[in-house]
Amino acid sequence: MNHILFVDDEPDVLDGLRNVLRSERARWEMHFAVGGEAALSELDGKPFDVIVTDMRMPGIDGLALLGMVRKRYPQVARIVLSGYADLAAVARATSVAHQYLLKPCGADALRAVIDRALGLQALLANDQLRKVVGGLGTLPSAPSVYQALTAALSDPNVEIKKLAAIVKRDMGLATRVLQFVNSAYCGLAQRITSIESAITHLGFNTMRHLALTVEVFASFGGAGEKAFEQMEGHALLTARLARKLAPKPLNPDVAFAAGLLHDAGKLVLMSRAHAPYWRAVDEARRSGAPSFAAEKEVLGATHAEIGAYLLGLWDLPHDIVEPAAFHHSLDRAGQNGFDMTAVIMLADALAHDAAGEKGDNSTAVLEKLAAFGDVKAWKEMALAEAKAARAM
Image (tube, rainbow, N blue to C red):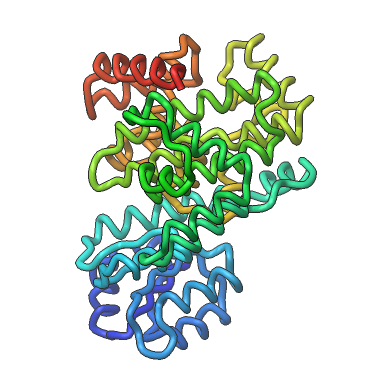
């Protein structure tokens, strides 16, 4: 059974959760703690898989509690369930929480979020996966510029000059920012030559995600080799498509980042396990099997699992890690509606199709997700986006 801890300073709220989730007692062992101190006592006494906490509590509030959980029990999935919708508070909470849910939250929605978190936790706790990743050699550290920008952006009153100073510390990022803002994609009437002006035009979220992709690709050996260039091109097209496909209330900027990083596991394998990775690629070509199936056979883990493991170690947002983990899991396509995982699966399939490539499960993905839109219109949009990306 999975162990779930619910935390709130109001006993009536916990009683309500106990009642609406009563049907889950056969598969979840649920514990209910009144306040942050009681929650820490529960965590010290037994292992938990998921913690669901309120934000505004006396003494140890939700933000402080989840910060302690992240440090002491990093394997626990962290979910906020709060009626506090202040933008600054939400921004701070997302630095320590995997998911942020607003009260009132229906039982089905809460149940679905917990189930999805448990699925990802099971993947990241897989001993065979840890063994495979551990054998790949030294993995890159969490992206430093991305972390610096995220920390700065947690302040809603941050000044452009402060962000520009962070960007200017990294020549690769500064170059990419100016290249991107002056590209055909942005379509500005005049050329932008200052980092400050570029940040103003691109917006904070785009800046953060540009920093993330620059550092990730640099960490895995740069884009000097043709294979890395192709990988980066596919990642960018997938990201652009994901941003256009993401329906409300999904965040299009998060969809863009998830698209950029959905194949991070391939970058790990290409740079840290070059020979066995290409052996798996050759095996897939020879047998006609999907590449992820060949990776599982040769390496013991797929690039999707390895990518999610790495992004999880970096503590990136759940909506980025989850699509990386499951973008080849056909049974997930549309299982929870047109969620972030479905968006990235679709964007990945369309990006391969627009490039004239045969992606793993691409046809099956398009068939399963056809209920959420017009496949012909999607393909036309993908071709237009591919053309715009090439113009960049």
